[in-house]
Amino acid sequence: MLLKYIFHLVVIIFLSACSNEILNSESIEISENQPLIEHYNTQIKYSDSGLVKIVVVSGHMKDFTEEKETSRQEFSNGFRVGIINKDGLESGHIKSIKALRDLKTQIWTLIGNVEVIHKGGNQLYTDKLYWDRKAKQFNTDSQVRIIDKEEEIIGLGLKAEDDLSEYTIFDVKGHFESQIIQE
Image (cartoon, rainbow, N blue to C red; front, side):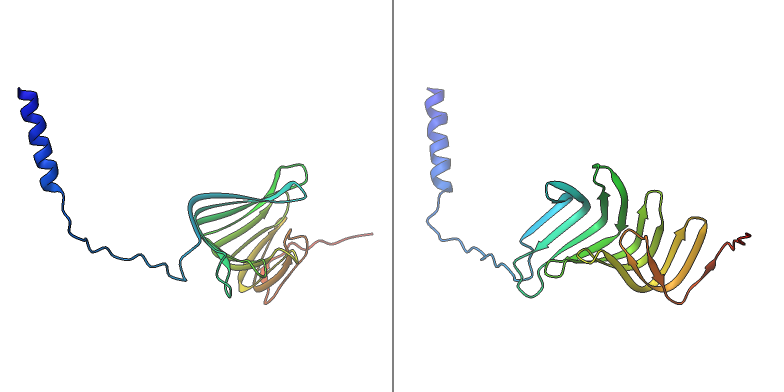
């Protein structure tokens, strides 16, 4: 009997909670400036001919691939690119606070505490750096600091190969070790 009473009470409560009113709902608008994909703690591997060339890690990534005029990927909350050699080992890295990859030109803009380090090679530090992956070159108009062996070179502006094997620094200042070669 108690079970029957509880059942009727549940049915009455359920029916009284129903309504035929049309609820006002807010429409969802998708802005053209919204990313197609947004991802946190991102890891992307870029490969060529089946071999991984770079590994990108970022705290936050937004992909604006569908924007016709400005298709791009934005990386923030830390950005790191591991450069992978032909043996599959990391031979260097590029770090910054944030980055932007233009999908049409394949030029990366790295912003904030940028560092480029090649194991056993040179180190580059700046606040803003452009990386043209097709041409395999870096350039900037910002202040730069390169550590090349025991020398520290500071200047304003740079053009360099992306492995830092060759570079030109403009408005140079720094400490150079002079070597006298005797025959």
